[in-house]
Image (cartoon, rainbow, N blue to C red; front, side, top):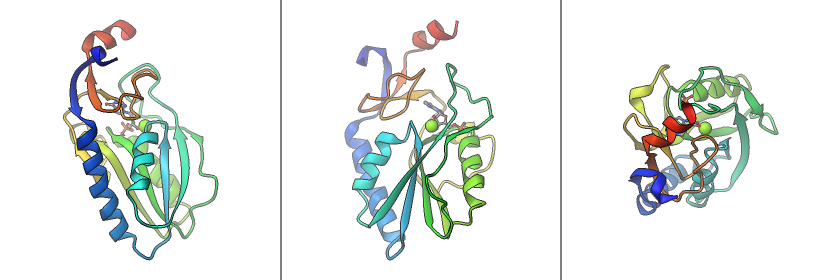
Amino acid sequence: MREMIEQVLLDEKQIAERISDIGKKISQDYQGKDLLLIGVLKGAFIFLADLVRAIDLPIALDFVAVSSYGFSTETTGVVRIIKDVDYPVTGKHVLLVEDIVDSGLTLRYLAQVLAEQKPASLRICALLDKPERRKVSLDVDYVGFSIPNEFVVGYGLDYNGQYRNLPFVGALKHSIYSKSEA
Ligand code: IMP
Ligand code: MG
């Protein structure tokens, strides 16, 4: 699959080191608190799996799933919850965990929906951030890496449902989009 990749942006070692740091920071910040991590499916599944093992606290875990981009690389702006949290987050210290913040629409919507349930606190953690692409203002409390405005895959992130299993984050070759979007 490596031949589909134009350039590796973040290799396995860089990702592991950064997650270890974020895990330590989260462990300090939530000392003595009951932390509930909510992963946004599917993209966050690998990041979340590594992140929870870097957190040295008792944690609870839940997942939400939202409608995806389909076959495009641009968000439609319409976010739909396909799978909601299993239990209300009322009174919990919630950390929403996402693969990437692009326009910010997905996380802003999810944060609004969760805030209605009155959690004790609500923060956001994303492995990647593309600040140039932001359409709505959003506070991202823990960011792994800020990256340029380029569509990336791997380490959980997909294009058209593929490439999630690449162990690194890389930019796809442009010829691959032009084939399926033509
Ligand atoms: P937003 O709502 O525009 O912030 O989009 C966030 C979602 O879009 C992420 O959860 C990803 O699923 C997807 N996304 C945004 N940029 C990329 C990318 O470069 N590669 C893969 N998925 C992306
Ligand atoms: Mg996603």
